[in-house]
Image 1 (tube, rainbow, N blue to C red):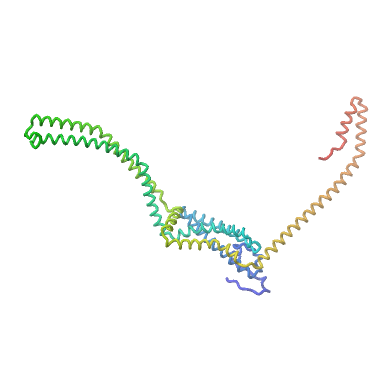
Image 2 (cartoon, helix red, strand yellow):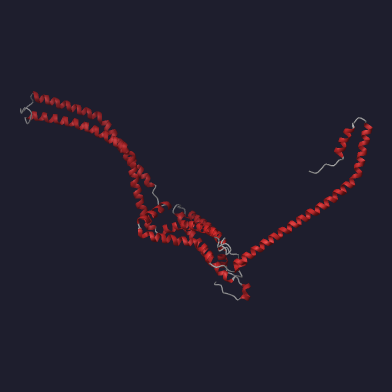
Length: 399
């Protein structure tokens, strides 16, 4: 329910709602001190709302980030909530350190600003990826195709030397076989022309010259067949190795293609390429980054810009009072301990005095007894008597 303003005389009856107390907790305000600060109540509600907004945004951003690298919905939601809680803790620590007594100090404020800026820039990335999801998917496909072509060129370069050697060997063998086959073909044509009278001597029939040409043709053909049979295994081996190389290249390309994914880093790379190649998107991208980054900076900005009221003064006075009470309690404790030690010393001195006074006559009696035994025995030396006396009767100094 909305809260209503009450008169000054009834202010002690003000009861905040649970949501207001929750916002105060988010803004790190002390409920007991804030209850009577009418103006500061709303100020700290505003700060609490900025922290709440940043908390929700951080949780959603981190949840989406983990969803791009984890398939288990329960796990990435749990991790997103956990990281959102960490951001909440950091924000509460940042705004707790900003008061009217130290907000003008440049170094702490700069440190808090840099920390919030770093977190804000990182948190903006998942949100940008979500907003440009369709464009990034298209760019990812183009990037993967470019990577596939590049990988194919690299594999071709790896096997290029060996493929060149095999091609040269195959060409040399085929050239030799072709040359030999051309010789056989010419010998066959000469024999046929001599036999039908279309060439050579011009006489039809098998004559001596025709038989000689036939024999020459058959000889060359036999040499060609022998050479072909000798080179055939080598040609097959070359062709098999060429086929194996092509299969290895295709297999490596398939394995490399299997590594393609749409993970976070892949999508970030696609986003960078998309921005680099699309000038129309650049301005909107940087504008969105600034806006999303400001969402993370909101608690620090709100706590810094909002004026200070009576609450901060109460906090300062209450802290000084607690310090004074702590100092006073420590002084009292010290005085009591010193008093105890002094009285214990006095009491111990009296006890020791009484102890020596009471035992004085007993010591004399004991010394007489030692002396009587020493005189009766007549075997112990005087030095031996003195050592017993020191051990049994004389006092030992305290260490």
